[in-house]
Image 1 (cartoon, rainbow, N blue to C red):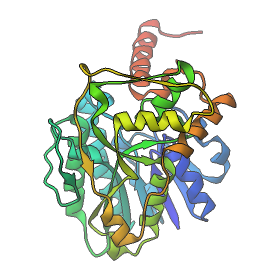
Image 2: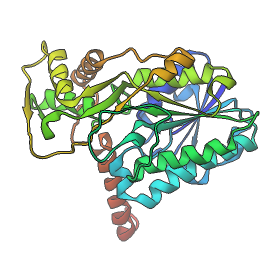
Image 3: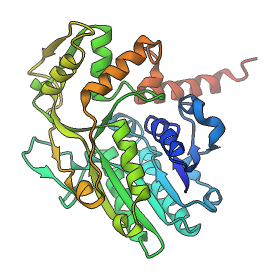
Length: 340
């Protein structure tokens, strides 16, 4: 199958693309290369890499393609809130334009990266949210995702089959690593300081999923019959974790590596809490996320010890810090003019 992965040089893409290649798919990556292409270095000779901005998507690159996996986005709340206008243009309008290009070029499958953050509630709740739950998010990131879903579903037809994967918070090692995700951050702090700080008592629930399971979920939808995914929304997660319990699980998983302490602050922090039901995708497509915390944190630890992703102050591991750095450098270079 010929597959285009937008945003394929990002955190998830750098795990997904090699897995697609291993399964015999021909892969084209469309990416702004916001972070460069270093995460795809081992497979650059096996893919077509097209550099571009999702807001100016060239529909002609979809000629002859069988599917699009749409990952390209500003991928968390801080980056969305940093520039809400750009967030809307990229996450909502950009996603819609790629879907329209699929329709124009007769690409039958479009699998979009959505988010469980659409279930965010301002106060803790005991509800288990499923794909039928009413949602009306107000935060720029989650709002942009649900708006994209609602516009793209209107394009569904006998020839065009969009589906949407609402992912829990992802964790695990990627060649394009991130340390601004909760499990990855806990592992980093365990390694660097031996201390994990948990805020607001750590009583909040969060749905989480390993990056390899995320990639398998995309591949499952890619391989599924069109009628099984057309117009469907699927939640994907391994488990709903209580944050304090998660910290202690990370501590236990790394018990042979280091003596780690968990500090709990009961006053400050975000108390937002929600739980999500992922039974639909198992029932409909037979997919179940199997990977938990232990394997992931030990793999990250091993990669750090190997000298990979261990320059922890590098802003490229933190999406908002990298964005701020690029904007600052752009302004500096504009004022500076020619360097040499």
